Image (tube, rainbow, N blue to C red; front, top):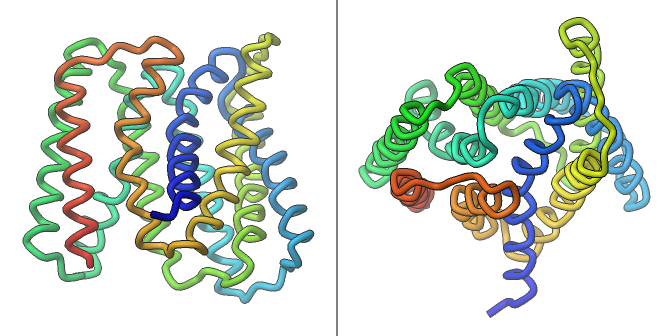
Length: 286
């Protein structure tokens, strides 16, 4: 067993899953889009600086620059922007569950719009994931979850799924950390004027805000990216991707432990079904 790879994989998935809880705390004290713009500015500058130290350069083709701008706007701007705004009204665990649907959504969009062949196991996984989502949504909405927040979270993961499909083949090999940093800076530049126009800025300075902002900027924003690249280099992208199966469970578990969010039997059943659906889709692609 590769103990180091196991440690890297578990560390990454904990950091990714915890991002929803830290964001949920932070938006309680600061305007969400202003917070996110500041976070991307700091994370982007750190990522670009580290990339420069590693010998990476801003030498991208026109297609790669297009992918940087598109992915920066859709993934960081729309996806995380929608989630940060939504978490003013919905719980972090619910946002994490909706976000964990990304592999199912990408498989569905590829099947519908790009006519990519999906074996029976993959089709079964898609329907299982949908069933899990219906179970959770029925439980949460009947329990008073805010519909506007839920819709925003779904729009966000939809934007991320679209970005994932549109930028296929436009990656910059050996320059990935630099690209990620540039995408963050694009998102920061896009979100700031939106915040300026549509938000009434408020900042309630407290140790909770400082801790949550620092954590979400440095840990999910920068450290998780570095850990992910290290893991992929060590065991490959396919094996590394299997750690994402833990995201639905850890997302709701961390929210329950840190901020005391409640879990129902329907939540647990729904998360289990979604996870099995993701596993089925990923196995069918092999």
